[in-house]
Image 1 (tube, rainbow, N blue to C red):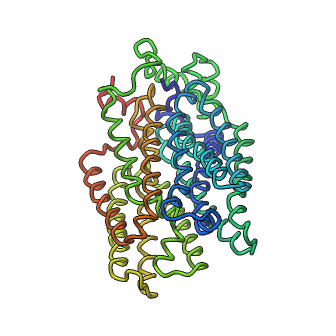
Image 2 (cartoon, rainbow, N blue to C red):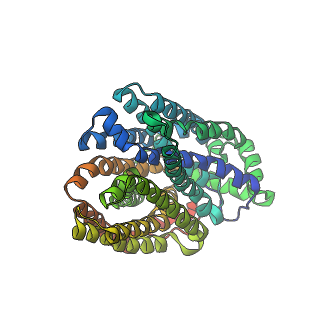
Image 3 (cartoon, rainbow, N blue to C red):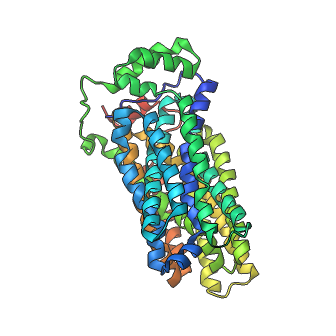
Length: 460
């Protein structure tokens, strides 16, 4: 059972709260870096290990198999040992993966180390936003949890930019190894900075360590007058007398938040976002770009992602989650349809006009993702589940997300080799379905305390 919970809306804001959230969000930065860094190495990996399209897809998605495992198993240790303790372990996983991938002696060892990094990514996708959500007042929760998403896209941009810089150093056959190895430095920084963060007061309350929780709540909020009311709300919501720690998760009472989490996670990947993250240089080459320009265009993708994530971060608690999803869905449909049209029109004979259309379309696509799904998904999943099962709910959402990500990333090279037009048309069609789902079924969670949201979804 999830013992950690979110702070009530009357809670305050302190520099310590912001700093703690920012450090936890570095798990997201490594998440983004690890996710995107392989995009600059696909050509080298194909040559070094003699991969065809199918085996290239598997090699790229091998880390995603790790993310599935990591997201699936993260919830229980997070409940048993605390969110912060698990973040330390994830930092070690990132470091081992970075060094191991850089020094891999054959394809099997490379797959193994990428798998370890995937476990780190999957775990971070559950625990980083969960930890931040559970130390944040409802008034600031969206923006603080969105720090994790901001750092994910910042990590993606860093990976793209790092790949570009490394590619200009003329390092020869070891260029791709340096691209992976650089991740070891932010992984070490993340590990040591975690010593400056507190245990979650919600986890402490679940362990009946009320005095410790009270002291941390006061330090996080900077407002002693609200601490007792927050303690009371936490105790009532946990309802330890009526809900056992081993309470079943998959039951009728939780069916609504379960279906909401699965739907938003599936649609996130059915947009094709991870195909762009993992294969951006390859896609731009398909559209007629040269080697150097494809790397630069990839950096432009990362920059656009960061810019529009920042815009969403600033307004998510004012504009609302549902409105952002509607705007993003419309942007998805228009941009993906444009890219599909360009591939249908130009086929294998792109000129400068066609290449420019694809570039603009994909930049609009990444902007739509950053402003909508990218900013909302982890905030929304963390908000719709009751406190007592939130860790398992977050794990379910992440598990669904990464299963879909692995499927998209594995199949993209094979389908793209057959028809770039068809695959982008498919993604556009899926986003039409997402828009319908958002309008008809997605609830608005803006400004609602987690305890109140539990009641709105009809959960006792």
